[in-house]
Length: 430
Image (cartoon, rainbow, N blue to C red; front, side, top):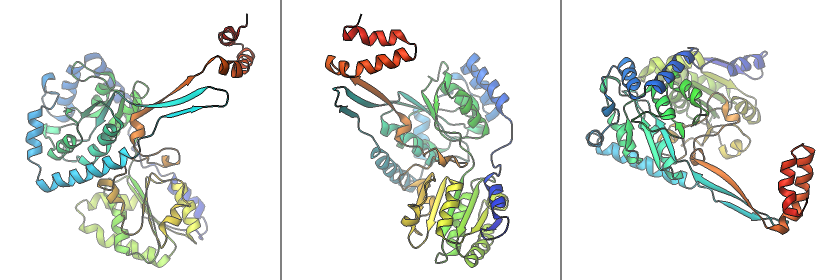
């Protein structure tokens, strides 16, 4: 764990080193992914079956690529009632928040008489990638599928690997709750390739969303342009800004909640009190051994964790903006006032009773967020990822007479005389 104090000599150099830590995988998978995509494009379903046998240790035939309704129902029936209730609460809240985001169409008539507008329409189809096997996340199904449904996407196709043939019942229950019934037992780069290019069994989609390993991320990068994607997600991260009035153990657990994702995750505490910083560090050490994922969380904290002691909250806000974290927790006397001074974060959680984990499951806003400082220019998943805008213009002869000559002048200045002439003939020019 890195310990920094802004008043110490060499702080800026040490902080820059923290910013530049390479947490993403250094494994080069681009060539392997390109070969998988080419194989799926060339051989379609046959390639999917061969690759599933190779990577997921499971025999499958083209007619079994899609998970049948009977399998879905059997899996859903195996989920305890209390988990169904939890899924339903989460889904209801996620849907309500994302439906509230839906934008209105725009229509204005300007002083020259042109009517200008912008129309929102949903994508026709979306592909959802969901990690499978034992390390599966039903919350990701809800967070990716429900905004698409709220936006009005007609078709959602979901791919989930089933290593060794294992279906995760809670993932299928989440899919059914989100209204997804088109589900395929295909994973990895081959699933992304199938969603992008299509096979005899899997029709292509217009956009692919959802988390995955390095191969999935690289496949999304390579098919971008053929289809849209949500983002190239990196390891999870949190910045917690807390004052000395907080409970050190609660803060420590909040830091470990991110660290337990994987060894490359990053948890950072920013505080204005050195004694509190020490107390939190000690609480992390005490709490770690009690976690089932202690080895993962411990490696993350040791390699990438940090505690930064600042002079004041203005300095804290500046450093937070430079970190531009995926998750930002503010636990101070006036969290809203401090949040107002911070511009860059994927999602913010205000107050001691609002831990980031709440947003992972049931709060309502999306948990698919920009990582690796990309919150400087990117946003979390929303209904806008499943909508597109079309602008339109309508006008009569009078409006054309008012604005047309300026367009002709600009067209001729650019050497595009047919452009100018297409307006001029309507104005009576020869």
